[in-house]
Length: 175
Image 1 (cartoon, helix red, strand yellow):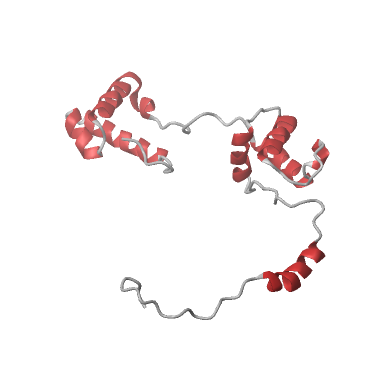
Image 2 (tube, one colour; image 1 turned 90 degrees about the vertical axis):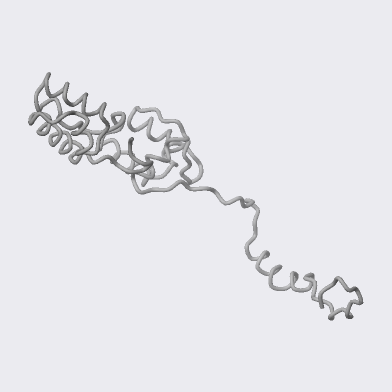
């Protein structure tokens, strides 16, 4: 059954459903009927019945969280954010641009936890930051010359529309 992608599980609601099922099971209601009433799979109700028998209501207690334990603590995230605010130059980079590889390097240096550059953006997003991409511009670029060219030279080079052509005698061409 499971949840749709991106939908968090409601652990409190799930525990409440298990407790409701436990109460029905204690009243002697058949497992199939319990499954129908609490809208769960029969196999789940069977597992809950076994957990209830082995450990009582404690056996039906909710899980603390889903997924793998986080590799970075809150204090690590604060250190990373301070490092992001300092910029990449203290790490030895020439430009002030954060790339995911540079963020991964910062995380490893600050926290001792190695992240693949392709996953470092998740940490950035968690902190409310975004990846930056350099604009592909030449170092020799002269903004003033470009502005003058666009204002003076380009209009001279740009084609102008010709006068309207004569009507076609073709029967297939729309007028």
